[in-house]
Amino acid sequence: MKTALTEMLGIDLPVIMAPMFLVTNTKMIIAASESGIAGCIPALNFRTIEDLEAGIREIKSQTKKPFGINLIVNKSNVLAKKQLHKCLDLGVSFFITSLGSPEEVIRESKKHGVRVFCDVIEKGYARKVEDLGADGVIAVNSGAGGHLGNIPASILVPELKKACRIPVISAGGVGTGAGIVSMLALGADGLSIGSPFIASTESGVSEDYKSACVKYGAEDIVTTTKLSGSRCTVINTPYVKKIGTEQNLVEGFLNKNKQLKKYAKMLTYYRGMKLLEKAAFQASYQSVWCAGSSIEFTKAIEPVGAIVQRFRDEMRTTLRDLSKLTGDR
Image (tube, rainbow, N blue to C red; front, side, top):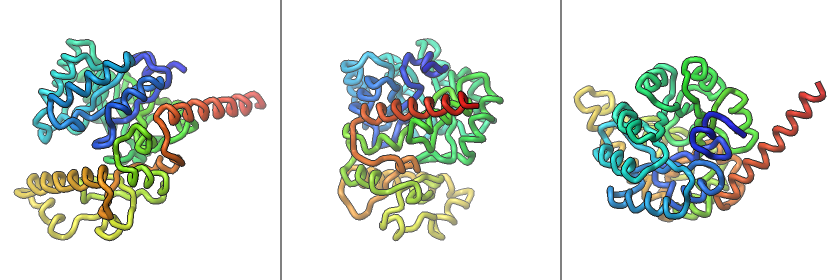
């Protein structure tokens, strides 16, 4: 199968394993790349610039296939500039930018021939990053895990395809090969898929977190503002039900106060990320696990390669069924 994404990155399937904060690790990236898709890991999953360098070198020592780094490009990431230049020096294949202006990343990456894809949730911002020189947009839809968009993929993908000349990669709500085919039929040039890989054997999160992705389904995914101040999807565990999904009166007041809003959001984000980190790697009843509705199709803990192979098999079946249908007509 050839799409704009497979041609740009030199991969077999038009799929990027989405960068997941605290979840994605070097083993997952290597396995993804070797299975014929492109892996991407958040730079912030490495504690220091030295750790980032060591991680990239480890990946490059075990695969020659393309992989990417996700950069948070707003002011909250004080390491962004150092992360960018370290990645460029070490020769990563592409970047995915999130939460801010990608202008510097695009400008510096062009000097090195490195692709840049930018997270967007609507056409206005998609046009802006296209004008800046982005190579493609990651269309984060309302089915995405973690921080999500507001528009369903069925609307967002065609809208961005009409508004932009650069490739559109759909992100959110897909956990099967049939889902991949459906997004391509909508006009997407590829997909960014994350939640189905949380319960992979290569993932370093706790067995409780992985088991939750097997046990729970789409109906168990809820959105919360308690982690970062912005809407984020989590599994509706007994603990999440206990603490609720909305900010309390004090948090809500602080976030609406013009003078205190910035600091309140920073505190909420810091506290929420610490809660996620603790839940991801430790067994605890106080579990807040990020995931999207596509965990509906996670039925076992299995290797990344097996998940990708399932996608391939399901895509073949779906395309065969579609060819029969159109043939009958």
